Image (cartoon, rainbow, N blue to C red; front, side, top):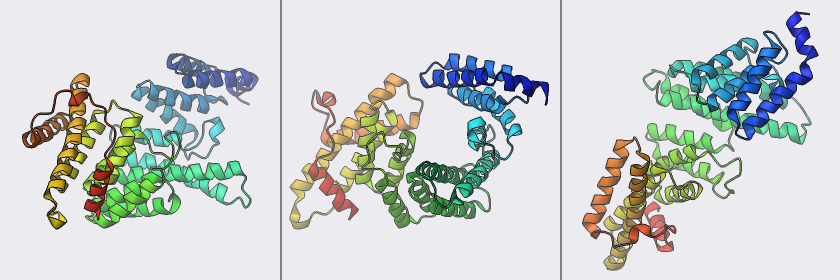
Length: 374
């Protein structure tokens, strides 16, 4: 046995405790202390030591959290050399996570990201196959299988997004996207982001009705769940969902998503802007719609009320835009243009209107949006 390994075996309890303490410090937000403890564990286990892989992976994660991308990448690359196919047990630092981090940390993006994602996907498929081969799975094994399938679905969707952006010029980009979302639909049909990605691909193919169907299915998987439920997509994913819903003229559903996002975090410039824009479009449709039985007065009041709400969202967006010195100038310009258009039609807002709290769209507006969707 190599001297390094003998030392590692002898000090195994101490090294294990060091790494466990590092994870605890990370969980309670003491990042510097976590990095110091994990670095000490890596130094003590030495090259070829039993805890080297686990320490490298943990240091990779900690440096990502610390914003030290180069250092994180180096740790993950060292971990890859010790577990090239991601087949070692996760409890010792093996598995697909390092490949997925390297895909996201890639400087080059494009094909470099894809090849790391594919290595992660390959490792996940092997883990899934191992669990699928078990005839009578325990509850814990079934939960692990479900988690791995969702994770694989997420990886497949991430690769499809790369082919829709960085690699959209590739001759086989559309075929690759189709193959990826087909596998995602089979492996992770209960994963909301699967259907969101399907919708994105269908929009790019100008198959809008199919995109709407996919978006509805994505929403159905989480819209009635409490905020803390693990099936509720991350905040940025739901912001992207709202944009897709608006792009497919599903304003009612987009507003539902945006109202929930504001409840989760009322400091997002983009969410307030999207809500204002969405309400602007909804009001514009009401204004331009031909009303049955000559009910122009009711229609007039309805679209004006909707634009009034739009103004509140846009005003809040621009207020946060200034406070945060937000970098997206086009967003600020568009929000200002929409606000000017509203004020031109409705006149300047009454004094104190900006201070009124948003309380959601009224039942009448919801009915109007439903008519627009019909």
